[in-house]
Image: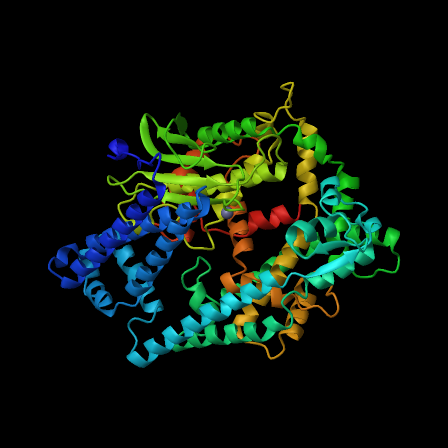
Length: 635
Ligand SMILES: [Zn+2]
């Protein structure tokens, strides 16, 4: 019944007015619906009205956030930001609206079907987690705690952003760095070159800088960003979260946070961390031996490899042992061919077609397509893939319209910053990853309930479908179907296989470092330590196979503690699930549509209609497990 749904008509001018009214109208509608709900005139329609509130809110959030991030005109971006704030305020008010909670909790679940009951249960849980059902004293304390958390968290992040440090080097100390790095780092009047702790400086320097002492110096500065000012702020943030969780009846922040995640229980986090650490032990130690031997070849005095040498020698080993020439690789990834390849590969995999449409959009770089299946339009996608001034600087999928069965067509946007000519293979992988979110948004856009629409699963599952799709960007046969050089010659199979082998080096080491971060994120929140540095150091010694760098205070700039809280394990958790999902596919036949269509229907199209664990079990025919991940780590 969705086939006749019209896509959103985008304007060809007057964007600010258009965006303002799109968002204001949706928010006004949401407010109006909340009033109707609380008036209680039609108790039989309570849940339907509540769904309409959520559709209107999602529409406002989607347009506001998208155009705040991508529109070329600054006034439109600002209008989007304002609309985002308005939407956020309304969402907060709704979450704390006791009258609304009372109306919803008066609905008798016995009179609902399974889907509606799930919507009701999840909604009431959100209200309770906000503290709406508590007495006045608790509610006002929760409000205080959350306001103070926002302030402290903002300051914590600001200190990291502002806490850029520098080292001053002689020109000769740029030896090993790529040409464009050297060109953009000219000496000042004192003859010195300034290298900062920001990623575009830090990452290449630690990876390619041949001067070991300078790498060490830069690394120490990097790991001391926002130190000491963030130490006390972090402790306060942890205490605030602990109190909030406890006052709402939870055994600490991890329990509160994990309740809405696939992992389910706070206590499951340390179990997961220990399990992954054990699984990565052999593989991690094996690669560490290779790395240490390579470091010792030049520096026999080194006994423990730390961050000073980790990236640098990791790269050396990859170059020497796997012989991948990045310059040669790039020749096979011309942007237009990659884009076409992405659409061909995912179209074949999911049984869909992309039909390019010529419509007004926000920028001439944007390519729009209708997503078709057997003649029926499922949704519309917009690919906005090249950099420009004022545009969001990373790679992400944004919603434009959440799809609702029979009411509105799903529309999503991919926002990336890729070269128009030759791409790094790493960027090709990113493109496949982000496209995984986009196709999830579209395929899950045909539910009646807004709560189930699109990428609406638990937060620690969200990355799994995208991580799984990355496999297609690493497979030699898949790559050969679109990665051809100027003369039309496909990328050699041997080269594609070497690229993959090089990437696999160090995966156990990586897993152990990730578990150090995950353990820190969990234990800091569970039992706030008196001495954060001492505790962080102890955790590094237990989990990380790289050594601690003396006199550094990594936690002070561990920005993810703000956004992820105790949930840093999420990255690795979703990778475990991604490997498990991928185990259903035959690596020798990546396009077996019996498997890929089942995956499309049971995982992607299902959206948030079931718990992620149930979706995975529906697809695999068994509960998720760790086997595929363990096998991958140890081969
Ligand atoms: Zn992602």
